[in-house]
Figure 1: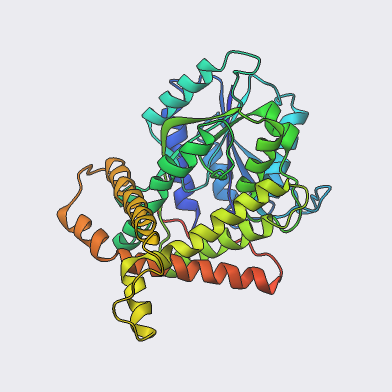
Figure 2: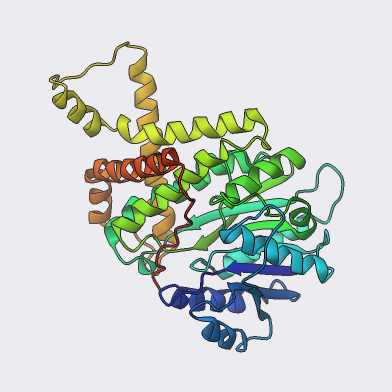
Length: 383
């Protein structure tokens, strides 16, 4: 059995995307998963509750799971993690927290294709084994088709994300332990394993997928895998949303490094990854030159000759992430061919994209240092 779980805030500006992705599940999954259910998880009295209920009536495989307004977890978890925990508790009560039930977590703007369903089915069929070789979790690639993004410039800037999927995340999750984290979409996990870990991580959790990954590493080392499946989402609609998205990620990850329940070695690695991400935009050649000009040295040289090849390797890796990422995004689009001006813009504007990443990162660091009330930012979802 496959259960697709789609938590949604249920706002007016997110509903059109939700409608699109539910249709993608209903159309593409049944040929490979005859035992299928799609759970739309909403908060009580959300803006589009009536529309979402009406959407569920169009397909018998779709149902609405409503989180009561007064529902509280043992650790007072909030936001998306609270919704996930409630949905997992419902499945446990219904007797579905079993090894032979798989849960596919998806965002409310991220759909799938027939190829996605096929790869998911292939993975599930290979896991009819027990013992140390059995896998309990898998993840694939999040792509951004052109037609799902409102602004082409932001689409180009987001090319780094599928690049990271086939680079950093594939190298860690694919080797058995998702120490670099997980995405909240195209996340496939055994229902029994999810029930064991749960999502009750506390009231300050805003990157619940990354926290789930670290607990999975601790309890099920070597039991994750990577699958060549794609999901199709939308980049932020505006540059401001781009900043807000990165801000939440950085703030949430820094919060996570403070959790004593997570082993110190995991937190140190997470802090290292955040620091590398934070410093990466500063290594861009244009940024280095601008810093040199500001400091009165228009021809800055490395402090040591040893740093030059290391810097060049890092820049080459960043360029590879964008290059491979745009290839994946283009291949996922209705018109699967790269346009010459897209490549030119990607190269010419890469320094601008570096500044965008840096702006979002700095906002996240400042928000973390203020230690204020955590805020789960949900950006608008283009249709």
